[in-house]
Length: 149
Image 1 (cartoon, rainbow, N blue to C red):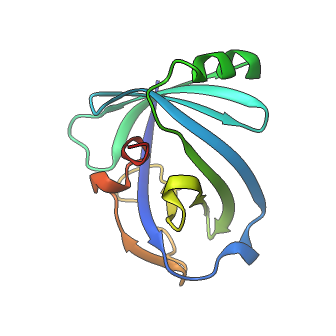
Image 2: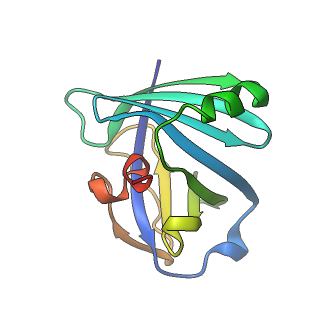
């Protein structure tokens, strides 16, 4: 098990010219219960099952387990996931000592752009680029697990 500590922001400026990598992602869920979110992600010809659970006594951190799957198995599991899919293009953007993952959503979530940054600990400082907008960490309507609805 690892701990994921991340903050999430809306994006309100141009960032694409800073991107060092783009990844097309398809995402679906087996469970969207906040106590045990189970996600299937397909990206770069690989599948990943990720389990996330709240971590007591923290604000931005969650327990996380991620298991890589062969693409064929991931596609088979995709057939039994909950209704709804997320399609997005992820842009990897270096910023100071960190990386931002900026997700440009497609299909039903077209127009939504969210940036996430993973931190080593909750109080860690980081540079906030000019294109970063309002912080939406912890706001349920921006949880990927809610964007499938």
